[in-house]
Length: 304
Image 1 (cartoon, one colour):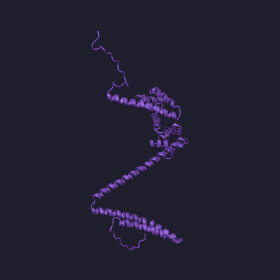
Image 2: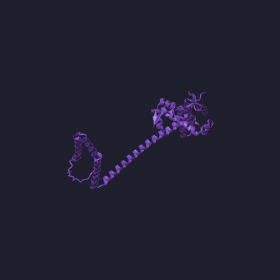
Image 3: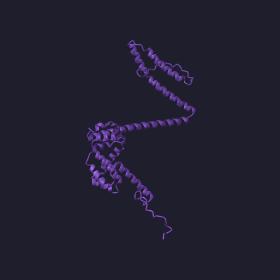
Image 4: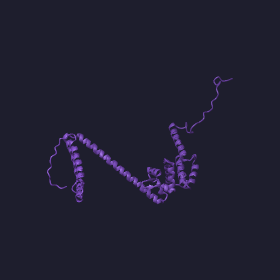
């Protein structure tokens, strides 16, 4: 006899498990962290693993093989190390380096080289950079350059006096010296920019202080400040006028002497110069209809 409760119903198959095996077995926060790690590891394998699925034995063998070759293999080994460093379980990384006979510093350099080359925006330029270095030792020397200079060298062929076309002909010591000089050029440029920024900040602070001082001053004190500004500008102009051997006055005297000695005429030229100067003074005086009488100055008999 058919059970009424189950009549017409078929038993459902067990749901197919999807996703990493830890999903549903660990606390939600831990599962999310593990999922994020799994995603990052997958991305690294795709970016640097050249299609080789992660397994510590497989990557150890691949790295060992690449270490026996040239600069391209050096970079491939660095790519594999990036994957291994991220994906290895606790203790696997140090064991891997020990079996490879590789120091941690050497592994860091190889990974840094692979990372920087991968970040270059132009694959053709990256290939040119690798070909120009020709050896892993020279490539390591170029890693001493800051990121922006490294990219500039690859993209434009030069940075801070270091020319990529000359790198191939350099010895490692010569390249090390050239890299040091290129870094020094950048540091000097940064110092100049920093000093300019500091100077601008100081001028801004001075302006702010002057504005505060002006706002808090009385009308008489403000007039005194404005008079100081006028006398400062006047002093600058008088200095530019110069004396008999300097400035405008010296230049005019030299021209007049030359014309006199060679029977040349420069009166019209000098007349135009004086006219423009006097016109400039008149414009200043007449601006805003300044009612300032110009007194006749007595000759004090002073020679500039």
